[in-house]
Length: 192
Image 1 (spheres, rainbow, N blue to C red):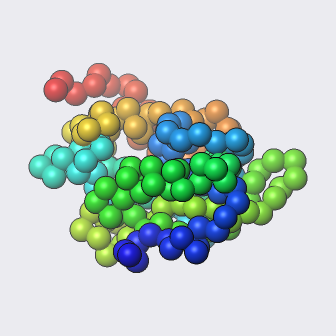
Image 2: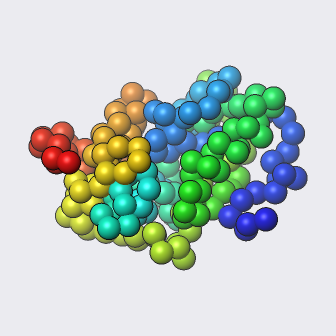
């Protein structure tokens, strides 16, 4: 078993919580019984992953989000019923680990509901040692990659704009991501 996935023992029986901070917020792709705004502390959302499949190619990489160390991140926690737990994990592994740039981990997440519950959620954290880890790119470099990126899941610009829209619906402003989305909204999509 890869060290980038959790063991079945670590994925204990019962309902599963999944923390989404990028496209999972607006396109989870799995059934869930509860959807709650949430906050993860200790890692932050960053456009720090070169996309070779979903939003780019090896020749023209796009740029997608990863959880990188330090800070905090607001997103969405999804509660998945126990009966759907392993099917959901299999789906997420196929979607999120297509190139193994993410490590599958459990993290403490605070639900931003009336109860302010703290739960343990499955999420995907960038592997800083992976060749697709972009690190901290300048705004200009980010914009260039997002403009050019187009992969199996569509244009990279659509991914950034949809993620910002999802953040806006929960009253969250991720300043660097919002600045990028504003620049992209102001220009016509690149011809394909």
